[in-house]
Length: 269
Picture 1: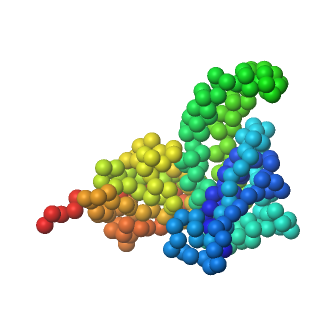
Picture 2 (picture 1 turned 90 degrees about the vertical axis):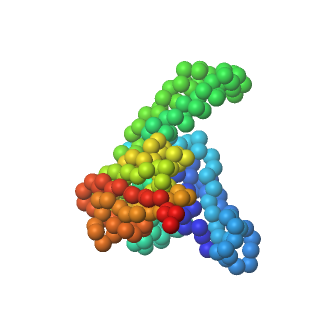
Picture 3 (picture 1 turned 180 degrees about the vertical axis):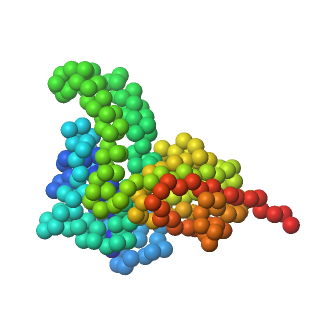
């Protein structure tokens, strides 16, 4: 009845940003009105419920940067948190939730990427912010306050990822973080880590040929080798021999990992 992946992504956005105007407010969801679920329908037309992101102006508050909102958003006996509370009890959902969060911290919420977006919006709004302040008497009627608020967001972006990783360890009784280093020839193909394609077009990915991310030692990480046209997957280097020639593998490790995906040209013979 629901798009579980969409629900996870929606929860992650609010939990990462610590949106103080959420759960009891600003929870909007929708579905196309069809009689039965159609798994073969075009995106958004299958009849499942999906969630929207709205009203984020109470997020990115530096005073909340160390706050663990996962237990709060999944507490029992509250109608606003009943769905996450129920789902999070299921082992596969917990794995997906933790890995989705880790994927986003490694890409979407990478501090350099978030700060780049903040800087872009600052540049776009700066020419009109004086008129905005004068009209609405906002920012305590001073442009300096606007700059201070933006600096607070940058600091939040720098500090939040490490705090959230600690929250995931604390909430789900995980052991530790590990770092995964993956390499490949981006001309020949790319690697998908869990749900995230390591491509230059993916937010936060700078070099798809040599990429690193932080995950958790207790949680299986799925790697998929995806060849470009004209190439085929050959093998992995740095994985157990039983998995070296499978294009889809799952890894659990208690130490850092270095893996290479090798692609080869399709033979013309």
